[in-house]
Image (cartoon, rainbow, N blue to C red):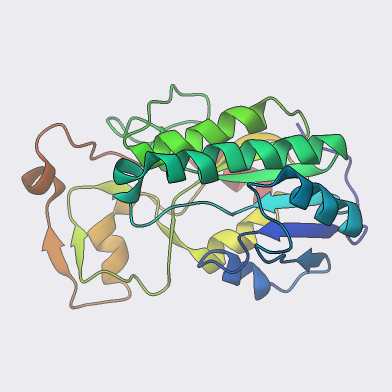
Amino acid sequence: MAINKTKEKLKIVVTGGSGRFGNSFRKINTKHRLYFPSKKELNILKPKSINNYLNRIRPKILIHLAALSRPMIIHETNIAKSISLNIIGTANTVIECAKQNIKIIYISTNFVYPGTKGSYLETDAINPINNYAWSKLGGETSVKLYKNSLILRTCVTERPFIHKKAFVDVQTNFEYHDIIAEKIMKLLKYEGVINVGGKIQSIYKFAKKSNNKIKKIYARKLYGNKYPLKQSMNIEKLKRLIS
């Protein structure tokens, strides 16, 4: 479902704008006016801070990038931090956006899918594969309650691929931050859930394009037979909407 089409210049607040993904939005060539509040200006753990900033800027859209991601182990060793930032912080942001009828675009992850069959549709059952994904799904639930919203399940990484080794046996939709950021800016008018990523391929094949010396590793050998190898999403909906 789409909101009213408009050619007007929009005010868009981007939380987490100083992070790896957020920096890609700073480089986008857009007619819209983007705002990147610091944590001091907009603290997602303090509703009054969120409210004050949104009242001052009066944006039409908020792109919610602020989150705890890496290292992944932190979601196992410090669940309080994971819950606070990814679940409670997102819920606070949704509540304050709802008060002012500001659309929220929430950046989630392909990890919310089970990772056992691959090519997941937006309507497929979800079953997060790790604590990080559970925390992101927790954020999704609050966003889903608010009609004026869009959930984007992304498969994204830095450019160039930062690791020296890559899984040969794990299939994903990895795409670089800058490319995904450009795609997101073409989805501003939509609502619901959209899978956002690149071509389905092994992580090794994706990484090898930017690093011919990357070494092969196997997830099954490291993590056992139960490790989910087919983590890819079906992105036909995305292609149809931005074509």
